[in-house]
Each structure stands twice: as C-alpha cells, then as structure tokens.
Length: 173
Ligand code: ZN
Image (tube, rainbow, N blue to C red; front, top):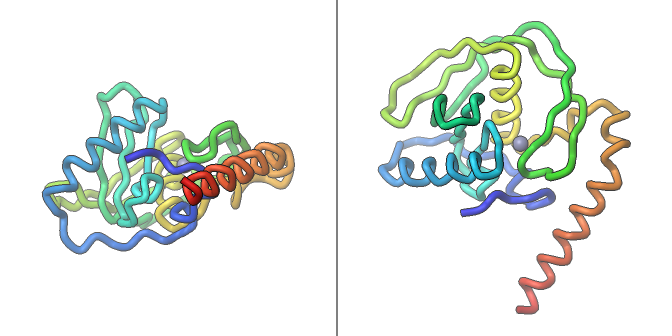
C-alpha cells in the first residue's frame, strides 16, 4: 500500500459505499494510519491508497492519540464559511486557499459498526470536508481560489509530467 499521487486516476473516481465491514478492514486501515503518520498528514481517504470504498482515517493531533477510522461518512449539516490554506498528501508541494464550511455534523460508522454523529469545527471540520471530497473524486485543486490555482499551475504540470514518466517506465519494464 502506498499513497497515490496526482494525477493517479483513482483520485478522480467515486469510492463505493461499504456494504459489509470485513475483518481485513482492521489491517488495511492500520496501514493507512501508518502511511498518514509517516507523511505527517492528519487525514487519508481510502481511494488515496487505491482502495475504492468509502473509508477514511483521520487524526488531527497527528500524534497517534486521536486516530479514528470512519466508514460511509456523510455530512448531515454544515454552516459558516472559512477560507484557509490547505494541502493534500496526494498533491505534494501544492498549497492553496480553499473555502470550507466552518462547522459540520457528520454521520459515520466505526469499525465495530457503531453509528456516530460527530460535530466538528475549524480544522476538524476542514479535514472531514477534505476527506469526504476525496471519496467523491474531488481534489483541493477543484475548489481553490483562482489565484491559488494559478500559483500552483507549474507544480501541477510537474506532477503530471512525473506521473507520465512513471507510467511509461512501468509499461516498458
Ligand atoms: Zn487530500
């Protein structure tokens, strides 16, 4: 398992709802958490590792104290608006301002199948929206202000070029 980098096609696909929580989910989500911590991230969606189901891990503390696994997350309510800079583990070197709701209420299932309703605000609310966007195939570059998008255009071209080179290397290997 590794973190897919833009423009990997899985990042643009919509992840499918989980119908059954399988035993293998424990190991896979633990692996996702490890990758997330290694990369100094605070959230990771399953399709970022090529797993096309609606699963995400997050830990805003970044210190293995608030780690959580969530399945089939849905935003029930959102309010307010904030504009802050955001980055993404699948878009290394890309940072831009993204408008998000200030507060959200999210419903999601735990690995034990328990349904939770979670109120979040500020950074936590931002992470929820960012990761749920991933599960829908949406990236921060789709939501950035035009100025931020422009400021990152060179870096995006570099990532696209690197991906093309990597894909052709794999093909000819
Ligand atoms: Zn991301």
